[in-house]
Length: 286
Length: 280
Image 1 (tube, one colour):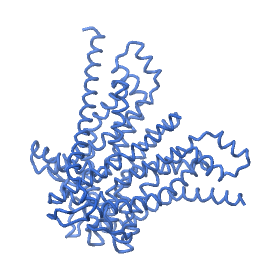
Image 2: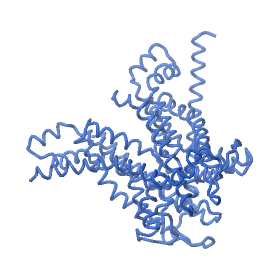
Image 3: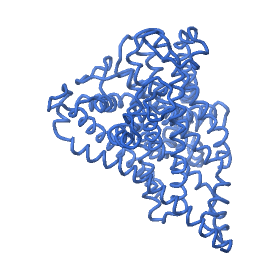
Image 4: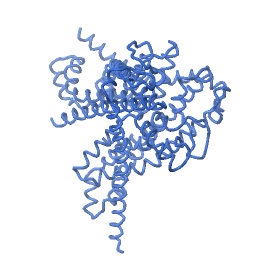
């Protein structure tokens, strides 16, 4: 009797676990199937065409792709140095009494939903950008800055964790030789934890590119490629958030599904690079 | 200037810059938190919990519909996501272990954890909303379940692996079949850890907005019928905050405050659980 239960239990856990793989495959298939109409209509031009005009049934994703790339790039340029600074502060500078509270509050801030960052951005940051840089304040630049603030806690926490994998004995040896803190950071911690640190940044990049709510509030959803960062713009997730519930034709829907598929493929690729190339070694080391 | 002096100066500059970036980063975060607390407390009142949504300009609009809707959506997602996630995690830790299949499932769920949640919304739209013809609470809960699954799965896997194998061996030696060893010995040993994982997963999906935008959609009134569009705090917050009406924006801040406090509390409780475990 218990033999049978045993088999049932074992097989049902296996079945459910395997279901995760099926689910992911299903997500890709469904998105692809729903993109077919748009793929057939536009082919490769979908990603090179810069005109997005639902009323004319013309859909080109270039403005959204451009917006995703630029806003994420801005966010990374702003957040990476700050995250490294915070991580160095937490791992080498802060007094032991300060380490835990500051570290924990940064982790808690990483748990605050992104919609809150977006709302804060809309009410408090948009006016500042408007006053300093002109324009209406709702812009690519604002989106990049709000995105950088949103990913900063996550990035700082994982970078610190990566730095903390450096064995104390290595650091202590360097200090014993008369190394300054910066010597230890640059010659011991960074070389030792390099893969982990880069992996953390790429992981944060993967999150930032798919982030919706933090940028939807402040980007404007304007399908126009502009080199002026103070102009409203759009990105793939912003387009989806604004237009999905309103789409009124098959081709419109299909184009939005193709955008989703594109976004999923991009973030899967980025996250896989982070996981398999940079963070893999850590697992073996453990 | 000697070499040593130069090193000390460079060190001081870099350390000052690091401390400065920590200060900049933390002050931004304090800014956001204080904005949230000040606006939130300012907007909080009893009517918010007692009343449903009202047209703009109407002083006694509340968030009851969104609070209850959010609760229902997250509860169903938890009811689906937790058992599935725990069982799948059990397979990884107890049966699959280092097998190729188990490792693949681990990798794929790790990637899923960071995958854009709005895409999950699009997927659920295609499989639930489009065939049924309308937005529904079910669609929202399913989207949240999909987001929750990999998180519960990975924490269960990690937590079960922490249970010492001697415990399992002792139970096996007493003649217990494997399912009994797992459900009565291994689960008990990992209880605190699994619970923490569940709390953090609930906190994570409670803050999700993007996958709800076009699944559960929104409703300005109280609705407990899962086959109809359903309000959530997050989508309500988004709609109210982007509206031009001041009283709606105020309600948006109240929703933001309530949601953040809920999520922070779950996170803090989860951490305390873990600390207690470590302390043992």
